[in-house]
Length: 418
Ligand SMILES: [Zn+2]
Ligand SMILES: [Zn+2]
Image 1 (cartoon, rainbow, N blue to C red):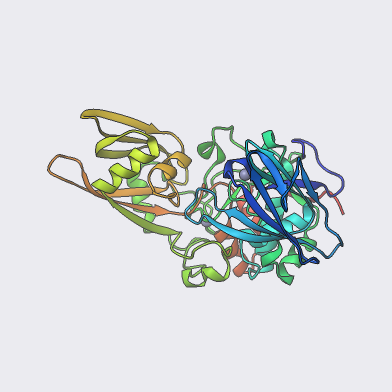
Image 2 (image 1 turned 180 degrees about the vertical axis):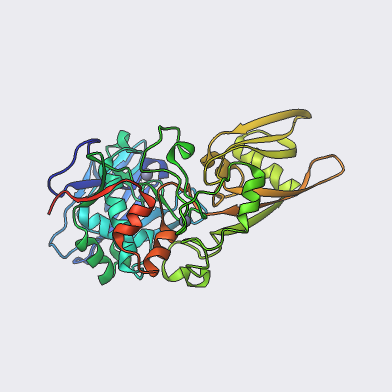
């Protein structure tokens, strides 16, 4: 595993989880590209079976440098609105074991081969080179900074999904994407001689978020809120009134449809992403839908929902503390949601695009919400690089360096290995 604070001097191999114990997956099929055999791997009564034969562990190596593995099914978008099962093609080696009664599949792969696939899983291989290069450098720095290591207990550097960074194998690779990764080989973003923990998300919505508002961690000097616009002045979005006023005004951002038209987004997004409106969006629920949603997501059987009130907003307008008031078994009750993640999880059957929203509601005769509409901006946590904004910059001929310096202030680009 990668170690936080260590700067590699040669290309490392990384450990990526393809099937996690939490997926509770019991079967997977693996085929080598140069073989006709479909290996069927099963977990049956806590025993690992390879084509019917019990084994404690299964290991596959690439047979030649050009060969790869075809693996099915692999989860993409765990828990998000775009969740699906996909087939992936990967290089490196595959290690399969049982963990907590389910399959645990790890792909060990040289970092640069992994990154090539990340760039074209996160965004399409048809994006301009400056976007793919910026995306690759950010993905490399994030992994090598090893600051989050969300799956360290499993001995993994990252999983294959949005929870860490999207890795859907070689299926979407293009020559431009290969060139973008080769052109930036070994390049990372540094701040004060340390590798930057370069977070990114799909669309900031106009202003990116400071990391300490998104996660319960200290503020990082290079993860500050940035106005995603050539004019660097940050609008004040920390009150409901100011956020609502700004919402319909700031329309010429790098991530807005004015720069990247929404009907063209499908050319540029990852192939599992649905196209739609991400810069500005809205969703409406009635009282019954709200009761069902909030009761299910919070495990509190509400009889009615009376109010939903933002208590605190970050610099991008993302709500980071929200109060829900209603009746639980006839008694007036209040619950507090205290992160942008929790707010997005609770207020949508799948996952709300972002917590940067204001609400318009009507009340019924019992002072409950009759209907409520959420008007939001952006997609994702909003900290660090805005992927659609970086695309907008690349389409307007900004260089890789300019893009990275726009989102990650006071940082340097450095090559740490050849
Ligand atoms: Zn993960
Ligand atoms: Zn943006």
